[in-house]
Length: 251
Image 1 (cartoon, rainbow, N blue to C red):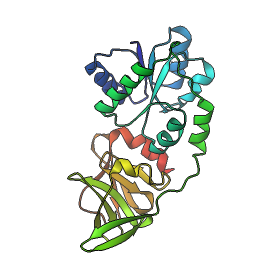
Image 2 (image 1 turned 180 degrees about the vertical axis):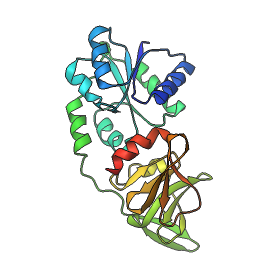
Image 3 (image 1 turned 90 degrees about the horizontal axis):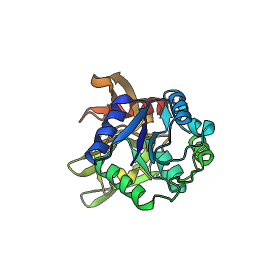
Image 4 (image 1 turned 90 degrees about the vertical axis):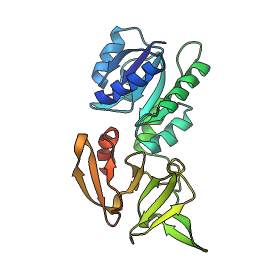
């Protein structure tokens, strides 16, 4: 299998390359920008499979396909949960959320091998995806959650939640009154229920509410630390792989 990685964050590209190598898949080339990718595709045979980051340093990766006809299958890599849930499901495209999980990567590669089209190219409507990036589908997101407190059921409004977090295989809602409630859900299930305009998954462990961010501080290893209004039990850290997308989300 001839594989290409297009990813502007070189540490993330190298990590993906190592994960693929563990599956005995060698990466023939790593590209890091729209401009570099266009030039490469114009002068080289196209690979069987591309791992493609959506947001590159010099623009959206879809600009590559405006300039050249790419004859390859594509697996998207993205930190934008809401885009994955909307655009990629609609277009039956596989995707991997950053930071990439080894088991999910193996599953995506297996899916490609099982459904590889005869001509090597999976049809993708990039215009539809670009439109969804700019104008996400209108949908209703969950406004309330419930938690059992003793013999009572507590109603928790989503706008009162400073963050959702996982701990000891449980998922909790930390509210603006300083309380933590155990929910009967997972962070993965919350991906489809939380408004992407309000909540962002800053790491595998935390979703934060933009309306309760009190401060953002530079942290070690190019990460960020978030200070919330009342949640003090743990440090809320934006993982290095999600810092760039977190900054875009803030805007």
